[in-house]
Each structure stands twice: as structure tokens, then as C-alpha cells.
Image (tube, rainbow, N blue to C red; front, side, top):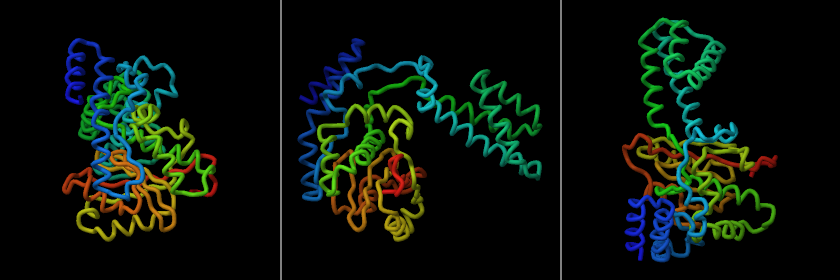
Length: 329
């Protein structure tokens, strides 16, 4: 049945019935859900408390059935600021400017004041948005006359512009792990006062993902992190480097052990999961598997997600609390 649905989806896609094609694509994944969950249960045994399924829920077709639409059609500035195009623009400009001024200072053998850097970065960003890259570069050229840093900045910004998404799509064929993790964290923090037993609480939250990722997860996947939308805020950041994962494993374990009690989104190479730490009792919620108890998260990362030698195979722990929380976790 999964193969049949895949074939129908392929046919409908080439007939330009995109919405129907998406529905059959999701159905093809859902046909394998029972088998995958049973397989995971056999692998993890009693440690897997609640299985999850890393695909759209069947009945959330009102979200994933929508086709992509151009970002230029988004008129609301609050929504514009949360799209990946805008966040990539901000991050790209910030990083490019850091490199630009670093090279400029080395060539001029002098320090440029922070206020001047911020002033020209804001002016550059405004011109870049309204008039384009060429005029923004011209603004800097009138102030600074070192051509090599300017050309590097120009090439960096052009490369970043080519990879920016031009449309917003709520259909995620490659997975919705980041959005799912954020939605799990939100549900956990929002309902925390309603439970006295942490394990029962996590099981109740994890059951929301038993048949797939809810529509809210798909929506969050399409946008950048939004503390204003979810009323959750990032409070703690810890990074485990590629070198520590490869050569200093005990140091990496010590970093995880030293994390304060709380809930974390763990950002890996092309994946996200949730780590819950409370005293000596730890849980992992992984969209690929489900809610896991008694699992060493470091061993899980090394076995399932770490790619030795890959420059981006790092681990980031992002801690979250509710906006209204005043006492952390």
C-alpha cells in the first residue's frame, strides 16, 4: 500500500494535482507507521515509553496540503521577521560584516569603533533591502577604500542571496524535527503546572506525536524560532564541539552532566530532539523514535547522528523556559 500511494503521488504530481499528490505522499509514509514503531520498540524495549512518528499527521492536510507561496506576498512585518529569508538575511549580514571589518582592521592596522560598525551595518542593511546589494556596497566604498575586503563582502552576500528560500512551504518531506521539538517543548512548559508526576506528564505530551507531527509542528518548521509566538524563551546554550565528540568524549559527557535541570532542544547535524533533565532522572524525546527513558543521550547521539569528520556535526543544547517563569525550570 505504501508503494501504491507513492506511485499515485508521483502520478498526481506530474499531472499538476499538487495538493492530492501531497496527501498521497503522507499516506504512503503513514502506511509504514505501525511497522516502524514496532521495529523501534524492539530496538529500545521498555526504554521506549511512547513511540512517535516523524511525518505529518494524516488529518493535518489543511496545513501540508497548501502549496508554496512567494515570500514577497507576505505583507505583515511581524510574519516577515520570522521567515527564514529574513533570519538568514540578518545572520548573513552580521557574519559578513564581522569578516569584513576583521580584514579591514588587519589591512589598516587599526581598530574601528563598535559604534561605527553598527551604524554602517544598519545603513548597509537598509540599502540592501530597498535598493539592492550594489548600492549597499557603494555606501561602504565611499567610507572605506580597501577593495579586497569589499569584494569579499560582495561575494559573501551574493552567495547567501542565492541560497535564500523564495517561498514559504508548510509541506516538509525531509522531516519536521525542529518544529516538532519546539512544539513538544511548548506543550511541556505550558502544561507543567497541571502535573505532579514528571513521567506521567511527559507521557501525556509524547502521546500528541504518536500518529505523527501535529500541524503546529509543521508551522513552526516553516518559520524561525519565535519566542513571541510561543511565549517561551531560550535561557541556556551549551555547545559540544566536533573535536570533543571525536577526541574528548569524557569532556563532552561532563558538559552534559553539568547542564542545569530543565528542558532542551538539542540541535544536531540535520536533526533536532528534546532532552529533559531533572535531578538524576533524564528523558529524551526524539521525533524519529519517541519518548525514551534511561537512555544516555551522548551514546544516542554518537550512534545515530554523529558523523565523524563532518565540520557541522556539532551538538548544541538550547534550554527553554516559559516567558512567565521566574525560577527557571
